[in-house]
Image 1 (tube, rainbow, N blue to C red):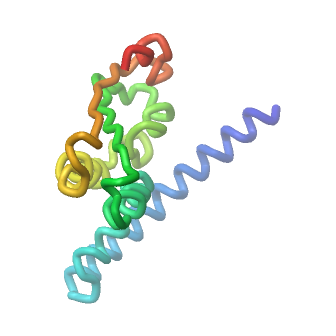
Image 2: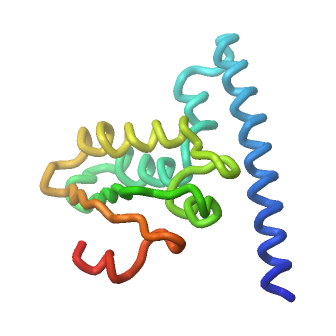
Image 3: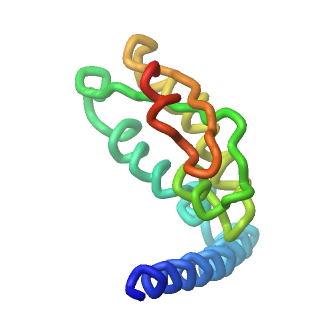
Length: 143
């Protein structure tokens, strides 16, 4: 009853959000091409929520080296078969990987965060993807 209705509404929202995102990104690209947006303003429409949180919490924070640890997880073997689960771990646009947001996250992880934090403040680890749940406690314990 209620659970199915919630899932239906959630799926409808993801579909609507995906369509809106495409429209906003097309508009941002057009405005950028016309010189009405700069690169940073355009970037605002392509970044993920996670990237935005990291920019405000790490990259632009004062004295971040004194109060920040970054745990950078790399998912191994992620499957898009169950894309509704995958979207909880990576940026998706419907059943497809959002390549632009993923590229921006990779840049954040591989370049921007290491430029702002000391190496001793960055912990990197890999996590195997376990279908259908994505991450399973048994494979996560050792990390």
